[in-house]
Amino acid sequence: MGIVIKSVVPLLAVGCLLAGCATAPPQTNKAAYQAYQEQNDPLKPFNKASYHFDNVLDTYVLRPVAIGYIDVTTPGIRRHVGEFMSNTDAPAQLLEFMAAGKPRDAGTTLVRFLVNSTVGIGGLFDPASALGYHPVYTDVGLTLAGYGVPQGPYLYLPFAGPSTLRDATGIPAAIVLNPTFPAPPSTGLTIFNYGSDALSVVNTRAELHGTISNIKKTSLDPYATFRSLYRQHRAAELKDINKRDVATPPAWYSAAQRKAMMHDEYDSTN
Image (cartoon, rainbow, N blue to C red):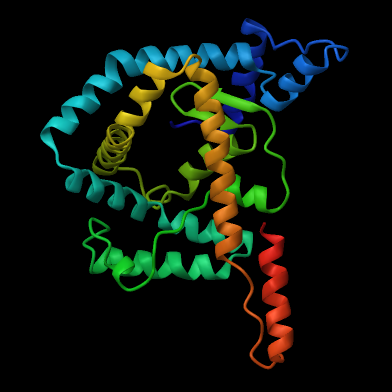
């Protein structure tokens, strides 16, 4: 997961050289050409090689570890671990919401971080939700999407999983925006970072165990299924942000003007 941006481009270049890029069918074959465009997966040979690598790693390492983790924990413990990990991401998400021009979500993120970090014992519990400040999510890829940056081709990175060229920029950004990044290096900090990263991976894999197992058992092409689900999930996340963080008309506007503004805001998010 510790991938910096300068390593992404060489990785793609090597992948294309070794595995080759998918060749587009002739435009005369309209059905095949349309399907190729909809897939938006010109790096498919490299992506599938990365997927198969991760699948082997998952089969022989992550899945057994996740099953053992499930056996020794309860759903409640896994939920609290997930809440703790989400809380550590809050400072980065606060900056990302501010950069995206989403003041409501930025405010919600700030309140959640302050409340959950104190009353919630470092984020292990989520008292902020009980106060009406429910979880919100964003990242660099969604921020760029809000500014109209296209997602680019589908990209499957080893260890990092499904992504797109736009979303892959969030990997190094997440490292830089991590609250521990500016801290002076130390043995304790290194152990904490590696430990929390490992716990986050195992906890997430455990939470998705049923879904992943079902896809691998029932899908004729798990690679294509994961690709489709990733795109649907990202589109839903962006839609939720746009619907949730609409502008508030000034109080001195007339009722008719406020109603019209809210109607326009709602229409623009659909």
